[in-house]
Amino acid sequence: MKRIAGLLFHASFGSSPEERLVDGGRQASTRDLIETLRAAGMDRLILFSSSPELVASLDDAGIQCVASDPVRAFHFGRTLQSVVRTERLDGFVYFGSGSGGLLSVDQATTLVRFARRDGPSALFNNFYSCDFCAVSGAQGLLDLHLPAIDNPLGFALSDQGTPCFGLPRDLATQVDIDTPIDLYLLAESRHGGPALRGFLNAQDLRHPALPALLDTLVDRSARLAVIGRVHPTAWAQLEAAVACRTSVYSEGRGLRASPMKRPLFLQELRKTVGVERFFATLATCADAAIVDTRPLLGHGRPLPPAADRFASDLFRDERVRDPLWSQFARLARGGDLPILLGGHGLVSGGLLLLAEIAWKDRELRRRLHPETIDWEKERP
Image (cartoon, rainbow, N blue to C red; front, side):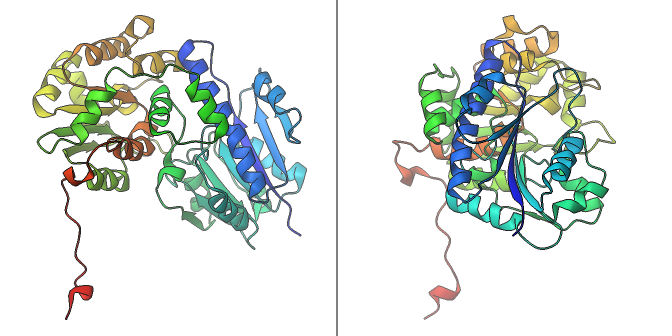
């Protein structure tokens, strides 16, 4: 009988209101995921967390909890190898906090079954930037060089000879609670398990730009600009679902998983013309915008702290210490263009949520795109 386990990694954020919101959403999603994994037949679950609150809430859940060292810098790869070695695991299903919360029991069962396969292999929700995965032949990981964070795990395993596979890109695999806007969209969509729904219902998650942006999505005469690390599949699904026209400016994919050898075009353009000119030009070209700010506002140095990034996402510029991110949030809030700001989740799973939310209580026949005819079926 193969030894497998579910490995849940939860890293807490800081103490700002925006960070506490994301942390609370991730904790709620983790509790739902635990129930799903148990229903899928995963008996052994191990939680790695720096959150005493989350550990305490799971005290009677029969889960092994491992506290992260608050002093020593966390290294994803070494932690993964340590648990594989200590628990003598043949396979595992790994989840970064905030991911996998929308999986059905059947989908989770598929992951558990994959982890029991013979020989080394890996199945990713996103090969290019891992949020969760299933790995079989786990003892083989002990001889490999693994990354310090989970995002480039697919590249690392593939480059060292492990066969890698990808899951379909849908709501269950692409929605990841990584920034505040992810929770705002989940609240509007009414997706999620009991713990997450309870958490979201207890929050005031009214985004000032979301109603107008949703109106744009169902307007045939409107144009939506999507900027950031947009995967072609996410764009295709959005394009097929909404009535408006879409213009996508996609670059920076794999930003965290693989270093970029050249600067990004829009980032260089923004630096050249300035933020005010950037917004003024955007307003002449689109009726609404969805912006992944991380590649756009990066400029050769580490991103500002999560407290700054999250406050900027919610237009709370007075709380943002970084001057560039504060200015960007202020101009996004003050313009006539409805804009959503966020991270990678906004332009991946977030696009799928928006495509669904936009048609809630609206007439579906207003969609722009006709149904496709199958040539073979139309033959006499």
